[in-house]
Amino acid sequence: MLAYLKAAPPLAKSFVAAPESWRAFPVVDPRAHWAGFNLFFGFNDAFFMSLMFFVSGLFVYSSLRRKGARTFARDRLIRLGIPFLAATAIVAPVAYYPAYLQSGGRGLAGYAHAWISLGDWPAGPAWFIWMLLAFDLVAAAMFALIPDFGDVLGRLTSNARDHPIRLFLLLVAVSFASYTPMTLIYSAEYWTSIGLFQFQTSRLFHYAIYFLAGIGVGAYGINRGLLTSGGILARHWGRWVAWGLIAFFSSAVFFFIALANRDAISPPLLEVLSGGVYALTCASLSFAFLALFIRFADHRRWIWDSLSANEYAIYLLHYMFVAWLQFAMLSFALPAIGKGVLVFAAVLLLSWATSAALRSVPAVARVV
Image (cartoon, rainbow, N blue to C red; front, side, top):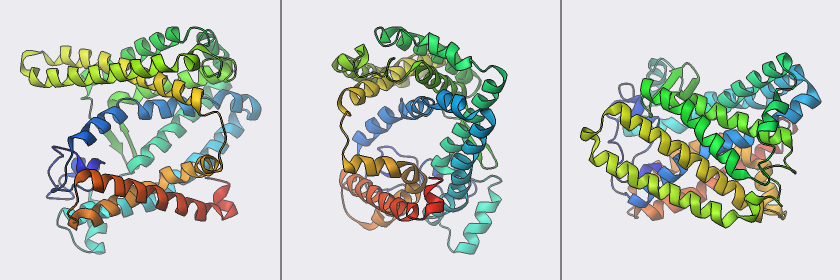
């Protein structure tokens, strides 16, 4: 949907001089915009990556106890390190070529020269993979030094089955304390880029908190803690979904008001207020989606089994299909919502089919 946002950034006039624009928006459609996609983008950005880190932590401690720190680290290096290198070496350059063409560049030789001139190597969405690997390796080191660290975290979540609000408030408080100081040092949108490795600087410790929260919930027991199907979170799913929506729309109102009055509010105060709103909205939407899926995703279907088996490869592959389909749609006189829906459907099908084809090779299937 990013190509079709209302008030999207202008087209980059130089691939090398303006990489901060095309890294986030590889293709910008100058003729098709819809404000509804802005709302969707804000909704997604408020919680989705944080929840992915939380879910990624759920089985870490049980895996560490079963395998030991060394084997766990080796397996993570294979499972995450190899796909990360493949995604950065192949998928990212293919995905960003349309950005080079839109900026006026021509030819693969010119693109290769411009790419090398950047001084780093854009990874695209694969940044999540390397950061998750880094968190996993830190967890392995913690386990080697403090074998019961997961049990300590588990005790912090032990009453979440019957009192999820306590874990929710703890998560809000700790994420606020870890996120807000970083926004006072860096802007909320600032990214650090070192070679192949990029991450949103202000959210580094915030994501680590969600990863540790996932470890704690998993260490206590998925079937007897926060995520049990008979717990309060699942039984009161409607309340959590309603609260998540209220929190999100309230945050949208806050940011509109803050934007209109930004000259009247001191920047440090605005960052503190924004940090509080972000921490609250992120936890609210995360708990809402956990409640929704625990309550209703309780039956297996072949199509969901296939999606589950292929989802990792879909994540690694999808970005190049997104960029090229958005680029191909530039000449079509369709409204933004029509282009967005068509691109989404085509990307899902192409990524899914490509994943299934690649995973038919046993060596690939063992990794992804």
